[in-house]
Structure formats: structure tokens, C-alpha cells
Image (cartoon, rainbow, N blue to C red):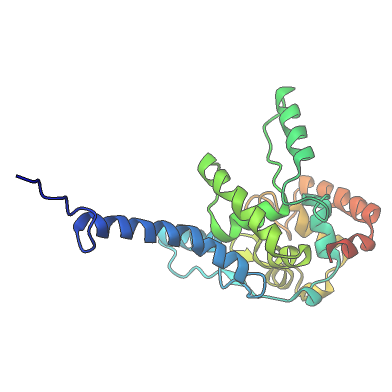
Length: 244
């Protein structure tokens, strides 16, 4: 007597529906970030995962009145001093690399082998990918996800667009995101009016904007500000022309 063929592969069966659902779920997980990144070339982000995370932290602490300070400004409404200061401070090879500064990675690793504290070597592009789509803290899982997102951003966006979005979403103070909100909060003037010294101080706090405060600078921040100004003078405003 012939055995009945299994119906697990037939349309409508439970096995088929589970397989189809799994394929659809994986496709969504893969395609959604891709679509968001590509759209970000033209569409300004409504929020970021870091901002969402900050709201969750505030609510978890019972601070239901927390509101992130943020106001988008286009590239031509940001003083040229700020992108120059941020590149001078965070990523001096930004116009030339493909999202990853392997020289800095190698240097960080060599310094660690020599006994120094292990430090990050993230580029502006990597930091933007993390801010927009991932979460804070140290994690190999997050780092692994950061790599393809960074490559995709570099592939689809111009360098100027990357820096424009970064300057509008990065945290310059506790709950203060972007150049305009920071300039108005700390200097009572718009981002378009930032001087070299003011921009350098804003860039100086980026490693830890909750610990380092723009309008109450520590000796470390003041020292770093002076170093950034020197780097800005060395690079010159012509360095911004390499972003096009």
C-alpha cells in the first residue's frame, strides 16, 4: 500500500506557513535598514535610536517630563567652523576613507598592546550608523551590525550629507541633540554664528557629553578645545571642499 506524501510542503500547511513567515520576517529585517539608509540620503531622520534610548532611560527613572532638545538645520545654516571642528577632533581622515580608518584602528591596537587603555577608533560614519540605528554601550553584536550599516551609508550618501546628518543628531549635552539646539542652549545664538572657539568646545565634549559640559568646561575640555583649534588652523577651511 503506497504511503501518503507528507503535506508539510504544501501551500496552506502549517510548515509552509511557518517557512513563509520566517522568510518574510528575515526579508523585512534585512530590507528595512537598507530602505531607511537609502531614504536618509534625501529625507531627514525623524529621530534616532539613541534618542529613543534616552527617552526610555528617562521614563525608567520616572522622569515623564523629559523632552529631547533638537532642531534640524540644513548644511548651509551651520557655521563652517563646526564641521571643521568635528573632523579635526573626531576623524581627520573623514573626507578620504570609506567609512573605516584602518590606520587609527591599527594605532589603537598597537597602543593597547603597549599597555594603554583600549580606545575606540570609530569614524564619523560609524558613529552616525550607531546613533541612527543601533544602541549605546560596548557589544560585539552591535559592532557587527555597525559594519554593514556604515558601508551602506558611505555607498549611498555623500560625505557632506553624512556630516550634515551627524551634526544634527549627535548629542552635545544631556538630552541636547544637534548643532542648533546646542548652540542655542550653550551660546544663545544659532548654529550659523558659531565661532571657531565655540565650535571647538562643542567638539571637545563629544566623547562624553554627559560628563563634559560645554558651558561649564573642565580643564580637560579647555585643553582639548585649544588642541582642536590648532588642528582646525592646520587643516584650514579648504578641507571642507573635499566633502563634495
